[in-house]
Amino acid sequence: MQIRLLPLALLAFACVEAHAVEDAAPQEPAAAVERPARIRLFGQNGVGLTMYTNALCEKQYDEEIEASGSIGHYFKAMVRKKPENISIGMPETDDTRNLATRDKLWASPYYSEHPLVPGQPVRLQANIANGSGWTCNRGRGIEISFVPEPGMDYEGDMIRDFEGGHCGIALRQVAADGTVTPLVGRLMPPKCPAEPAPAPSLMVMMMDADNLQYRLAEEGAGIDELDNDEDSVEDLEEMIAEAPLAGGMPLCIVTSGDADASEFGKKLPALLEKRGVQSQVVRVDGKALAAEWGLTEQRPLNFALAEHYCRSVTRRN
Image 1 (cartoon, rainbow, N blue to C red):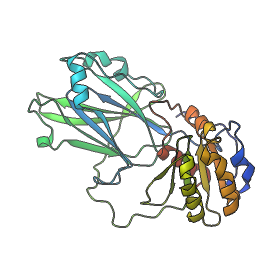
Image 2 (cartoon, helix red, strand yellow; image 1 turned 90 degrees about the horizontal axis):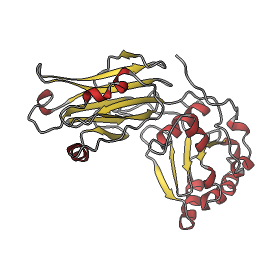
Image 3 (cartoon, rainbow, N blue to C red; image 1 turned 90 degrees about the vertical axis):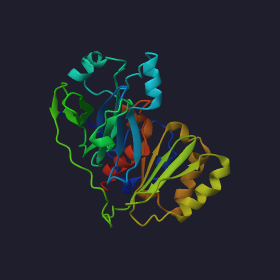
Image 4 (tube, one colour; image 1 turned 30 degrees about the vertical axis):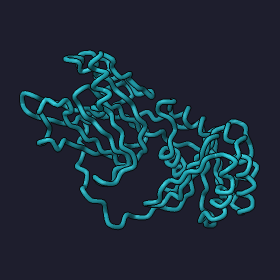
């Protein structure tokens, strides 16, 4: 298996000085981290396929992504406007090369590729969505879940056998040369554990010129957000002053170059110095990280991926 690694530019978080936060020059990501997993989901008219990320059980997940089956997709198919394929660099397979063979009765097949956080369970749920009266599992649909591994690629596809009355979800692992291997998924537990195991403490901040997202990366903690403008500077000051940054707890800041000249970018170095946590700071160039992982404007670096990187580089797994 060939895994791309980020350029090796070791930056121990215990040695970062305050001036590193002020440095606006382009930077490389801080350390070697395997790229996220990726999945290619196939969609077409009449098929409802939904992905749930970080799905710990049926009712608890981070994001719901509709891969296929929306009303908008249906009307586009009626006028022969097929959704565009969206790629983030996954190898071609027989299924992508032969996509046109699925285009029957206004099926309008397409695919979309998504980055996945390694180690976080993914749930796929599918059903027939064409109103024909034919359903899967008496209308309840079908589902499968799996845990993606770092640097690995996958395909998810709904299989329909109208004559046999059978529905299924095909899950395949994609090799670098485009060959695929079927994977056996598992059923998602209906309920989450009453007391999930706590994760080690880590503060993650993701900042651009418009806003700041942040959270204390413990089990169950939510993501908070502030507008990056003059009116919110007081809120930023309060947040930094009150953040539970214990001694030795890493503070990982993922930022784009244009954020350094923003209201928050100008204030942050002094606030961190006043709090006395300069030696705990790891600064990451978000644009360099997104480029190394092959992310695009359609599939940008998000908070979950940034946090995955921060956990890896600070070894807070």
